Length: 359
Image (cartoon, rainbow, N blue to C red; front, side, top):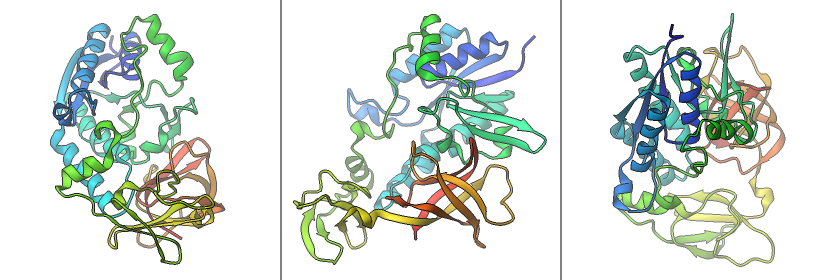
């Protein structure tokens, strides 16, 4: 007897391939699904992008190996509206967005989870390294046991309603020693497939070229300033720079200098010493409390302001307008507007949002 019907998100990689085989062996009725999100790979032969033709073929083969059906769902229009357009707009506003967060919220655990429920599935399973538990207080989102691969940082947008229908079968496993080894034992073709890196829909990792092609105009040259406002050089487009960047600045200096401000309206990039990058607090908007309820007052917790950053002790305070202020015990380097701030209590994700300002 089946333990339930599960839609498995198939990327063509080793993680989703192992998920499909694990759940099938555990008695679940599985259906494989791959999202077609972007088509710009067709314009540049040899450059892999999100859900490429090769990835879809790999996903189809993985489903065949697992003995399950495979579907390809076209979400290119939704991906354009909810991920690509906001990504371009954020960069043009001088922010550094995190498109993986938007993709998880709107596509994987939005549109695809809705499709799973429409197909009569009880759950959507993905290859994320994270965990979900349940008790009398509700559902809890936890870090994956593999600290090197934990992806809970990107999942803070999940709500109680969504978590009720999500499965992360790899959450208790370590990728290098367990997942790939299992893939080898199962004879999966993806066992040694390289992990995807960077922004999946930006060919070659050249985000400036991607943004210029999307917007239809070339990023203009402008001034590079020091922290006193003096012109010390020229740049070939402010969008080429990120906060905290040290290399490739095009300015000679007797000591290390870093990008400490980007003003796309004035079209300037400001360079300064590392101490200019330090800040002790931030305000985050578009905040989601995973429990569905904001705490009654300030809470002591820990936060990450970038992926793979060690947890940083802080105090989180809800503001009257729904935004959140995080005040850190120690100053943090290069807190970047547009990136995600994620709040933890030990292994549990309490919530997260988009960094709006640094104080």
